[in-house]
Image (tube, rainbow, N blue to C red; front, side, top):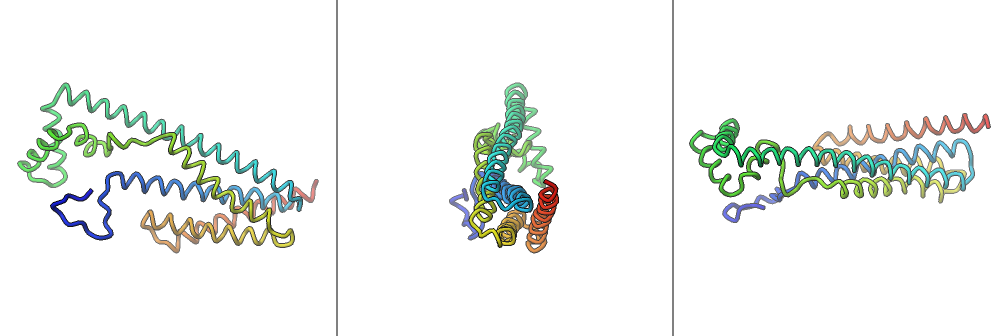
Length: 239
């Protein structure tokens, strides 16, 4: 939060945990993107082999459930490992602060000097921050961590599962509800639009060129659908 003595600049959110929230948003967008591409490739591949709506439903739902579960489990394990590492680093910092307070104070001042502060000012800042909250000060400067804002494995797993499911529903519902004669091209079109949107959002969050990101995302998804459709058609003719 911005200091009450300093005017806030419009469009510049001074909110604790902003970087972490942006990280969750980015993870959600990528999860939805995975759901779109993987499910679209699966159902379009099945559509290349058969026109049976029941076969499409079974394959699509199975792919959605398996993908969502896999995403949730993978995210939970990954974030749990990250959280364990963060906790270990914070515990080490607590121990050092308890056993070597003077050395830690000097280290903190040195880090601020390395960031461009005058040595006397760096020492004053280090002293004041240590008095206010030594662990938080060291965690932020040394480790880039917020002791009160560690990642949550459960939240990451749920977010990943939900975002994947939402993304997967688009191609699944499109191919199931569309008439058989146009289900594949209609699904490809809907997926291309959705991938353009997720590519644009990803580029905005990463502050990277948007046109390139959109083109890359759409091209990759369309290529995946083309390959699976051709494989499905080839296998379908042999069965």
